[in-house]
Image 1 (spheres, rainbow, N blue to C red):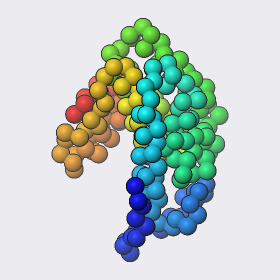
Image 2 (image 1 turned 180 degrees about the horizontal axis):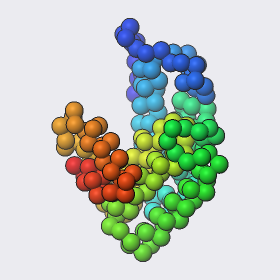
Image 3 (image 1 turned 90 degrees about the vertical axis):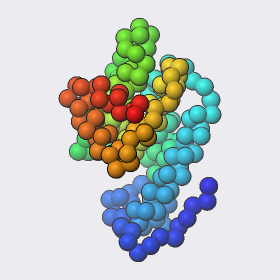
Length: 195
């Protein structure tokens, strides 16, 4: 895929904090960063779907990190490494490894004992992965790709992520479903990913 680095004058400049850890130091605008991330995520998807994996192979800290690295290694120096700073979302950085390990242990149990249906297992994992917020950037996109890989490994079709919804409503419906999941109501998010 050829990248197009020509941008119109309305592109937002990146601030100095946004440039930290950026591999491509020549990038100065948000549109350039978005395009480079999109390109790298597509490469990460190709890598991720190139081989069949069983759920147990996905439900490891090593795979969580490796997937993030595959999605962002051309963009960020810290791709695939747990964040070390506080964010407005996510657990304290010192708890990331422990909380992720607990999530992955829970998920392996759910799969082994068929505690929930495959879609629900997957969405519970996706939601908690975002809540832990392992990385400095890209957690939502990472968790969605992780969810697609997990649901596929459980023998189900990939999620549509609201593709059958009117485009202006998709983002609003997604965030509403996420807020409901934050309150413990997981079904709206399950319904959304199949809509």
